[in-house]
Length: 359
Image (cartoon, rainbow, N blue to C red; front, side):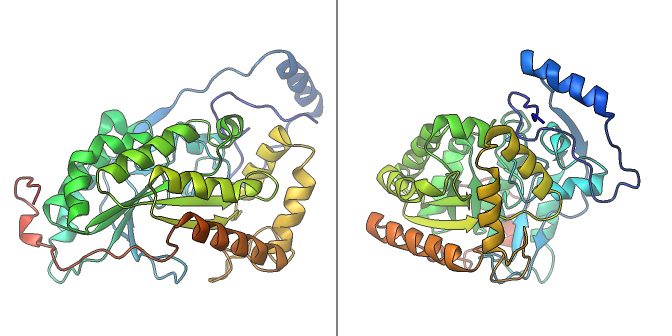
C-alpha cells in the first residue's frame, strides 16, 4: 500500500501515542479509496498551531554519561522542522498529542521562560555548568522569529556570564550574533549546527522545514568569522540514506569554518519507530528493508537499545565501521572530536535583574 506524503511535513500521519486507550484502525475500503485519491492529488497542507504555556521550571537536568552536559533548556515543545527521526517526538504523548503530525503542527511556547530561568539562576546554592539550549527541540525553529523566547533566554545568560551552547539546524541563530560573539570572546558559548546531508532533495524530505544544506554551511561560516566556535553534528547517521555522505559532510563543514564534529547513529525510541518507518516507506520503499536490517544489526537485533554507552553509537561491526570512518574523516578535515570546554568562573548571579551588558 502506498503511504501518503504531505508537503512540508515529515510525519505521514497522526501516529497514536503509547498512552492511548483506544486503538483506531481505518476501514479497508475507505483507506484504499483515500490512497487512490492521493495518487492523483496532493494532500491539503496543515497549518501550524501555537499555544502558550506558563512553566514552573525551565532547567531540565540529566545524569546521562552519554551527554556532555547535565542541564538543558527547551523553549518550545514540538518542532516545526518535522524531522521524522527526532527522538523528542514521544514527549508529545504526555500532552495527549500525536508524536506524528501533531508534534510538528501543534507547538507549545513557554512564554515565561526567561522569567523562570532568572529565578533558577538566582536561587541560593545554584552552581553554574554549561546549559544546552535546544537539546530536544530546536530553539530557533520558525516560530522563534516572532516570539523571541530564545533571544530573551540568551540575553539573560549573556548578562549573567553563564556558559551555554546552542544546538540548531536553523540559520535564524545568526540573528543573535550581537549576543553570541561577545560571549564567545570570553569562552562562554559555542554553537552546534546539525548537518545531515548535502543533497537538497534529501534535505527537503528528511527535514522539510529546516534550513537547506547550503544555508547551514553559510551559517557555519558566518558564526566562525564572528569568532564563535562552531561544531557540526552529523546526526543521525542513517544507514544507506545519509551514511554514504559522512566524509563529504565533515569536509564541507571544515571548509565552512567548523572546528569540531560529533555524530550519533539513528535511534528509534518509543513512537519514533513507527513515525520513521512510515517516512521510510513513503520516500525510500525499495531501501526500507535494508535500512531496518542494518539498524537492528547495530541494536542487538532490536530497533532500539536504550543502554548508556550504546544508544548513541550502536554496537557491532557496522557501528564500529561508522565510528572508524567518522574519526578518520574528522582527522583528515582537522575537526576536533572532544568536548567543548567553557568557563564557569565568570558567572555573576547578581546580574540576573540588571540591564544587558556585553562585557
